[in-house]
Length: 339
Image (tube, rainbow, N blue to C red; front, side):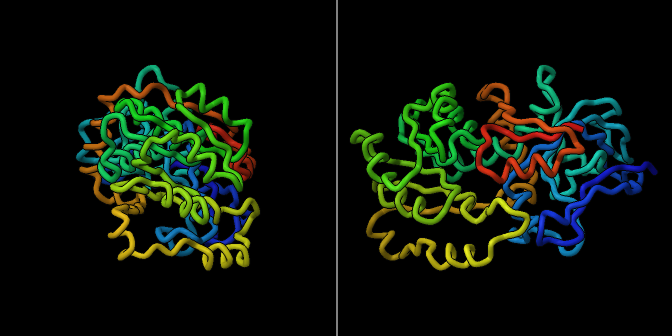
């Protein structure tokens, strides 16, 4: 048994209750590994879980965090593919905000030799989200036009890299003009700062092209406006609702209620007439179907997508500061906490 340090929520509700604690960690059980975590990747699902707005949030006390990279320090019975000292990256259904964790060996992958731990903690969740949205769900075809919201974030950067492998025409949206340079650097064909004139700016950016595929993570008017401009046979893949992620310690429930009541209400019968589709998904679906997750990761490996972009890095004792910046919407790329 070892002593580990974690950031634990007594229960979902307010991020201010997230506190640092020392706890005992048992040896790994059959099929498990003990990981000494070197880097933790932040995701919006972390925020929604701490707010209590995520359906997969555990009841009662829990340690947030879905993504990490580290070193194997112990191997449980019946594990033959790994040994102590191996450098890995992995995912977990919560528990990642920790110095150590025990994890089912099926949920770790070897860290590429030329990647840092911070880069390893910046890959699995966001790259899987982008790939799953574009390919199995979005059925991206050669040369199609793709609109990606929050394009300078982790998912948005991976989405462009993946789409460009099919020579797609990519349009990215961001919340501020300060992020447009990153879109240019990543090879987006067009960049839009979302504002009241978004429909007009999108139409101009399309330049007469059909809008075939939308990756949507904001919700509200942006979702509706994106759907309206899709061409027949267009697919809108929804994987988040960032408008609900308020920057404070706890949700603004009045604002949440307003957004909820004002959410787009799409009529399925009318969608048949329009010949458009909306496909929402939750990545936890893949965690529970590990064989599909590994299949997709194998396909992604063949694409040679490059090294993850770490936009911001914080030490472990500043994890709450990292969360606050992540909530602000001012970040680009992945926000990582290094242990």
